[in-house]
Image (cartoon, rainbow, N blue to C red; front, side):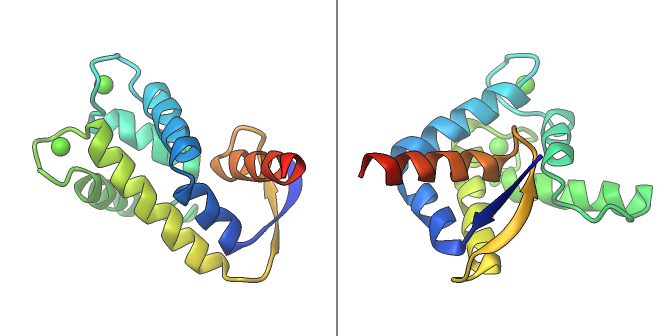
Amino acid sequence: MSLCMIDGPMVRRFVENGEAFDAMVKERFGTLDTDGDGVLSFPELRKGFEGLKLVARDATAAELAAQYDALFQKFDTDHNGSVDMAEFRSEMREIMLALAQGIGESPVQIALGNDSLLMKIVDLDDSVLQTA
Ligand SMILES: [Ca+2]
Ligand SMILES: [Ca+2]
């Protein structure tokens, strides 16, 4: 865990930096696609959501199941029962932009695990600043 300062524009810069965002999406997709068939099944995606901690921690098992189900439906835009890379990428974009909106323009301090999504953004943003 590290304490980091992050703001909405930082997240937005990351999403709009096509290369860095694509690399993150590919890496995350590859990690989640544990059977390596090139698409994410419901259990694979659910595992990923658990890592992201997008849902309330005090939810009951039934509430959790409903939330994961709703999330999966959101990702699976063509409703074929699996999430391909393009679906994953476009929904991740939405999530990140909503996150940027939620954080707002002023920096907030958050505790981040070293492998968390936001940690990557902070790392990347720092390296951008250093080389600028
Ligand atoms: Ca798979
Ligand atoms: Ca699909």
